[in-house]
Length: 95
Image 1 (cartoon, helix red, strand yellow):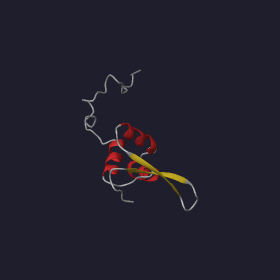
Image 2: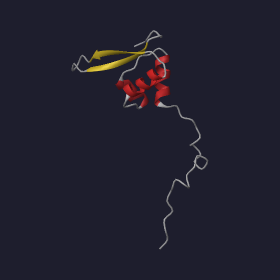
Image 3: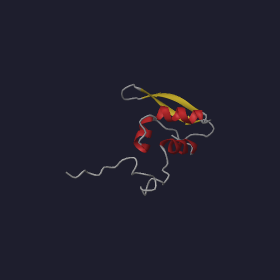
Image 4: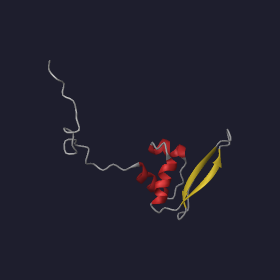
């Protein structure tokens, strides 16, 4: 019986995959650019725009890297639930 060839870590290298060496912008860099452009962001916006499920984690990372990000808690007028809006303090924000 012939063995099937499977992809193993030994066979896959960055050189063998044509797209592996292309630097892709990360969610962190995209959200950082979003905030630095003067816009605020909410978890729902981050999910819809950047596919980011954990905006609070990204904000935590950006704060550790030295960004001064303010959290404003807002209330949804439809159901009363609360959510965070993040704003880079040095730049005047656009909503």
